[in-house]
Length: 66
Image 1 (cartoon, rainbow, N blue to C red):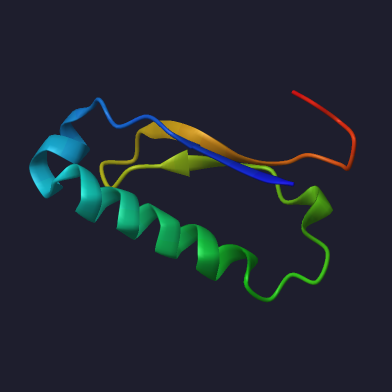
Image 2 (image 1 turned 60 degrees about the vertical axis):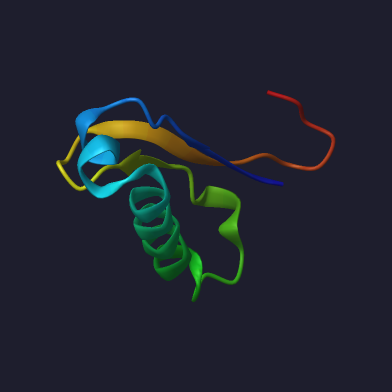
């Protein structure tokens, strides 16, 4: 299971608009994992366009709840 968390309460989302900044972040995530055959080790932070950490991408194994 792939879990993506994005907190939208900071200035980057106000400046660009929530939808636009979320879409930019999701495209960045997609590009990062597109060529990866097994995403099991692909946990990483999610950054806004200002360089602030606003969430995370977490790969959760089958049957594991976080």
